[in-house]
Image: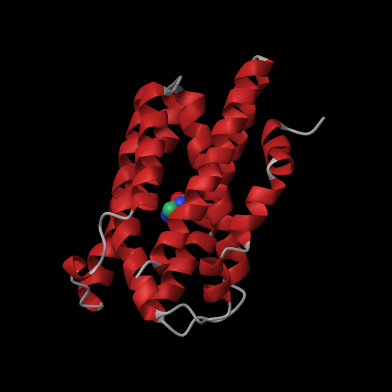
Length: 214
Ligand SMILES: Cc1ncc(CO)c(N)n1
């Protein structure tokens, strides 16, 4: 029988495809993402990485044991150092004044608040579902898009960070961890997490669309 995560991917194929073929993704693949759109994305994506740190911190506190905590602390380290470092550098180098960009986009707020509320109210498996949904999707498109060229070095670096083996290992760990959680779960719990997973993909689709707002 297919694993739980393979079932999720199969069950929500249409939503998955909508994200993999999102205009934001295909614009990067064809190297025609407007600068203004990338800058706007950087402004709210940096805010989301800060949110992700909070979500993974909740995962550390809700994890069933030291094995998971040890791994998740490594993930937190990568977010705090590599990812937050990237945003500090890139915003300065591109001379992005965050006040010139929208900080209050509704789709961005829905993604942030939806993810945070699910992480706060849910258990460990909920958080693993959220981050599996976000990272497996992100790794997949970045891996594909990394096969084509991007002239903007900052954009290329961002794609490379998410097509790299280290990020793939994180996404794979979440996948295996979710399958391990699901093995001990009742059917109605699996169905609840499947709905949550689809919601993550839908929030992501709207989040990436928000970069195009004037
Ligand atoms: C919005 C978003 N989703 C997923 C990822 C991958 O963790 C990311 N960096 N940003």
